[in-house]
Amino acid sequence: MKLLVIGAGGREHALAWRLSRDSCPSKVFVASGNAGTAADPGLVNLPLANPNALANFAEREKVRFTVVGPESFLADGIVDIFRARGQRIFGPTRDAARLETSKDFAKRFMLRHNIPTAFSETFTDAMLAHDYVDAKPGPFVIKADGLASGKGVVVTSTHNAAHCAIDDMLIRGKLGAAGSRVLIEDFLEGEEASFIVMVDGKNILPLASSQDHKRIFDGDRGPNTGGMGAYSPAPVVTPEVHGKVMREIICPAIRGLVAEGMPYVGFLYAGLMIGDDGSVRTVEFNCRMGDPEAQPILMRLKSNLPTLIELALEGKLDQADVEWDHRTALGVVIAASGYPETPRKGDVITGIPEETEEVKVFHAGTTMRGDETVTSGGRVLCVTALGENIHHARENAYATVDKIRFDGMQFRKDIGNRAANSNDPSIDESEKGVLKRPL
Ligand SMILES: Nc1ncnc2c1ncn2[C@@H]1O[C@H](COP(=O)(O)OP(=O)(O)O)[C@@H](O)[C@H]1O
Ligand SMILES: [Mg+2]
Image (cartoon, rainbow, N blue to C red; front, side, top):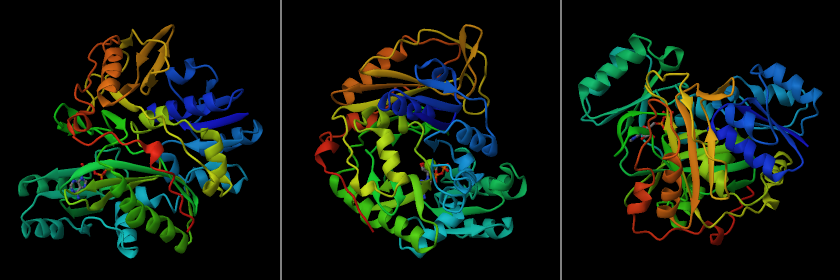
């Protein structure tokens, strides 16, 4: 069986690894992949990025189905292109993916469907945006409307920084077209978590909960990044919170997309803000799995991933059962020197150990130079480990991180700190039952 994964990061390595392990004998193509996907048995890198060329390839090779990793391909309408040619692909259409590609669209959609989220106003005129900020006390959340690879949101308590962010986006065009429209959002208090589901148009299969760490430095300090580590499950997503998220956010969203004529197929990710009072609000939607959340989640998945995706493509997710490893999985991202502003490329990486039942090093920004594995992007590796609880998963992951070397490597030493410090007992998701909601 031939499968195709689109993307080149850690999430795609994890997807391809899981698909290949669950569908032997198989060949999983990864476009364009990295040094990790080049080396893993059963995975084959494909140097293609053009959606039409990828669809040609899928047709010629009789690929059974394609899975899209990154949002940029969804924004380019790769799903529409594949579907128009009768190729099976797991991901939302360009229209449905506006939930991620336009924060203004997502905000209006949430208002239409009564989905809890922060109040916000949208501006294209800098003067009006400045007036709005002047009339408010802060803190302020300034968001670029379009895709900005994690660089489009400024959260600040000062008027000055809020004015600067507005000028950067609306006047100086720092983010290009993505920042030509900005949202100024009310600040939400609480703890964040990632809630990812698979959707087949109408049925929803929730995946295990997770939490990531966006800031570059320990203690959640320093600039935002694509994500410096993640773990699953997230104790903050209690069964009560889980039920609430499904009722108030996920189900209304999927129903709303059907009602608006763009049924959603693919992974849907709701970024949550969970209040002390147990309230849940939507920070954002992403139309794909999170990176690095995908790595620990897929490490815990015991069900067969190709089967789940095929059921989703056939509109039969209500027949799916999903089983999770009872253990905690935790991923530590190792980033390049200079990340996130100016990551250096070409540093030689040594000491990556063979995969074991408990530990897998997923690659992201890596490539081969002769016989050597070298850095080629900001986030380089995600060392992902299972453990009986968060403490063991952490020990296992960091013991492996300690073996890996490259010049200028950066990683956080406190991944999983929230869960490790929380008094909540670890949630056993396998006991929580499968929530299936035909609409
Ligand atoms: N309304 C808000 N209140 C408090 N923090 C927010 C709010 N919106 C966003 N944030 C913070 O900014 C981060 C990035 O915002 P998000 O909407 O997820 O955009 P993106 O992931 O596209 O950069 C969030 O993970 C959260 O930490
Ligand atoms: Mg986000």
